[in-house]
Length: 291
Image 1 (tube, one colour):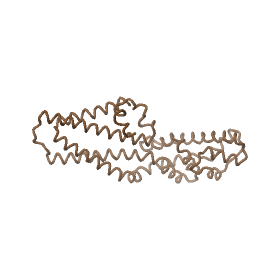
Image 2: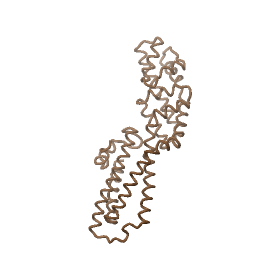
Image 3: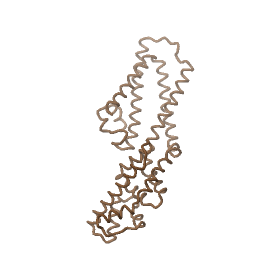
């Protein structure tokens, strides 16, 4: 990973310097301005449309995957099976389990309180609660691995499952509901959406940037900006310097988008691992600005 990031950083800088030298300062300055304009417009469009695009084209797919997980994970059954395995002579009904999880209290604390209310001593209740918590967590993660495909958006669900402990109160609250569709809606809104939206935002930005950049260059080409200007060595060298500036901006933009993803997905995830980036040019000179 670190080698690829260094190659990307070096290639972006070298190509922009070469392009600046080839075109000269004046023509390249116009292209730089069009690129900056494309970046600004792309950022604006991205902010305006991300949630709408997510709701229309992504949310349904993610919710469907979540619903299949919610249908497969029976919290009441899993809890009672684990209690029986531990020789705890208590059976919890669906209503009790449903009421135990409020979406704010840590699940093990909820289970512990529920078991204590049924007469189990504090030490035994705490031990049983931790084991039950671990069992439901294992079952939920296992079902995610089985029922969710590997598409980029459903990878957000897998990431949410990997961060189970951070979101455990919300996840247990949703899984203990009787309605899988409602449970999926809760999980999408409170757990997965915060991870999936940045992915959509980054992808949309690249799409918009490509479209606006191509449109801007087409306009410059049609207008024929500085097409007949004679290029001197001085103009080419000045263009190369401007190219270095543009390359740095591109790398800075890439670092910003990487920071967006890492902030949403966590420091270690399926897309980028911070431990693999710390010695790279991108991280040392660009990424740290944002993260």
